[in-house]
Length: 113
Length: 118
Image (cartoon, each protein chain N blue to C red):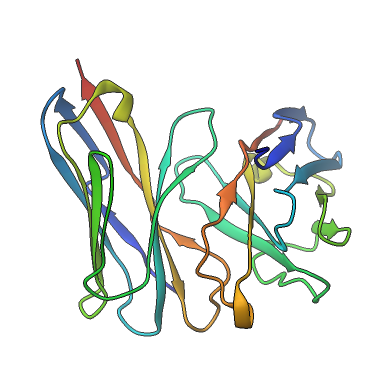
């Protein structure tokens, strides 16, 4: 059974604050790590797919890093805005299956104006 | 372009009834997945289709669950004799499969069907 853990479970920040979340995953048989943003009543939106140790990806004010040797990824949001409020999910695929995503339980972010 | 669509968006049914959920993947995507999220739990994998290969049904929770896909198009997920624990958001996703069958491509999700079994 693959175990993907995310922390914190929820987070409230003030508009303009920068924040970060953690995703930990099995370090053996790594294949890819995905980050998604999921707003209520909408489709989960893909943010990043990362495959290489040391990968860093950026999309606007959001960036992510990957450490496959120790099994963790960080997601950073710089200068949070109310529209960033959502649940941020990470998901892991291992080299055995390389098909379905195994999700963490998510970090629910609320940005207060 | 058009994304993944699902119908119905919401479904309320009585315990013991059968339900059918539909997914229209992105055109040209050969891989299709079904996931669900029950209240207070994370997203869990149900079933995977890839082209004309036999589907991977390893995530289906019981034999009351089945799914079909016609070629590389529409998929339906059927739940027979629904139970209250089947209440969940059912999400469909599709993706391209790259060379050598590699699956690191992004999975694109539909908006989900919210199923409530009374």
